[in-house]
Length: 192
Ligand SMILES: [Fe+2]
Ligand SMILES: [Fe+2]
Image (cartoon, rainbow, N blue to C red; front, top):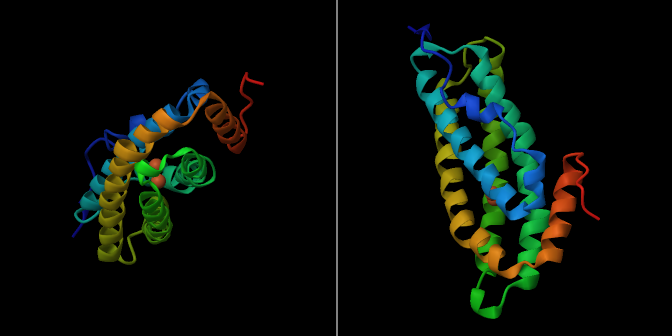
């Protein structure tokens, strides 16, 4: 039998509800890194919510915040990488960087993430609507797999892709990235 969740909302939610300041877009590689920091909190919150959902009735707010990040912020981030960061890096990489295979693998992991997000969304919408989970164990499994595989994905991006991007992308590349990423979010940046 489930009990009422008397604990305060997931601690991590405060961070998720803060948006990255728009002017960080002027440093687009660092914006992507900052997004990864938020996504690490998102993965932790999702894991904690999945664990708690096994024994307690969760209030709607954590699920609503996590849903918004998964359905709004994450797709924008994946577009930043697939439409801007990865193509520019492939263009500027040196043969010795051997980045093609890694970028191909990361792209296929994005597709896996999209599928897992669709699975997790079913349970999150039920929790957000105050309903019991229709498939609790499927929800917990999908949430666990999404959180752990996305953490590993980000570790590779931080350690290899962003590191290389800082060395290979010039000022013009980064300005083009910044403009595209800002336009994707409906933000006008103070650059020509
Ligand atoms: Fe990615
Ligand atoms: Fe990423």
